[in-house]
Image (tube, rainbow, N blue to C red; front, side, top):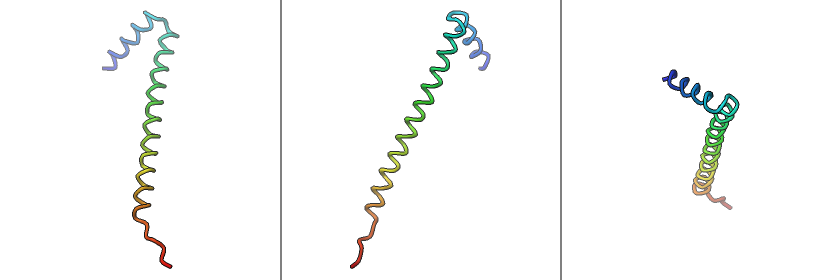
Amino acid sequence: MPLVIFLILVVLIAMFGFWDTLSALLGSIMMIILFAAAAAGLLVLTGMFIYHRVRKRTQTPDLP
């Protein structure tokens, strides 16, 4: 499998040139990282929302 990826990379460099291929690869990697960061942030916000909602529901009222 790594050989296939290497051959695809060689073909891309031959077609578009080194710097265009490098910028395309770096751009795609950064898009994946950005998507992962956004998904992690959404999970954190959802977890905080659920935590505060459950905590508010289970609090006992203050006794006088």
